[in-house]
Image 1: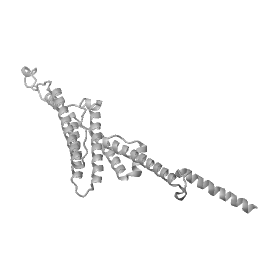
Image 2 (image 1 turned 135 degrees about the vertical axis):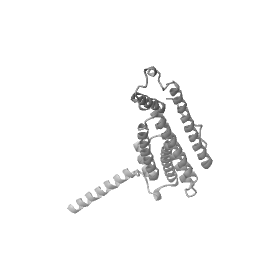
Image 3 (image 1 turned 90 degrees about the horizontal axis):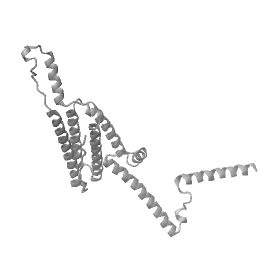
Length: 253
């Protein structure tokens, strides 16, 4: 009697374990292939294809966000890490590089220094893309993915720079002309007075050309930025046959 009770208990536990496994796997009501009628097998194949399409669409959305320079959510990062570990590691590396670029921008001493840093960064991304598309040892499928990643990272670079130019930190940066003026005035204050007749005659004349020069440099930077982006898009179209929309750059400060 006791043996029968134990056997029943074991069978119930096994049945419960099987039930839990089916729930976790999603196969709660799924029959074995041998038990399916042709119609049921067709329906099952259709459902599986729908699920595969949904998963594929989720990954396509992730890659689209990567190319457009958008940040991924935690869920999207987990999916990318599972599906494409290499793309996941490249995204993390690009984010670290982006943080370093933000720090370098904040450490700039003049507006022109920040502009030069940005242009050099953009040129570096263009060189990186050229090295990928011109490398005969990289399969085309990998080139496409790398090109999309580089374009996405370049767009993030553009956004980081334009966000910085609209910040209070950038607004407080002097121009190089203003730095030269300040140094000249400091030098004048240290020089001994030669004659009282020349006391009211400043040797260094200031003008209002600094602001105009600053605006011109801002526009020149935007032109370089736009040219580099357009060249990158032309490279992608030439090598991968993907037509892109015209590049629009926000140059407002």
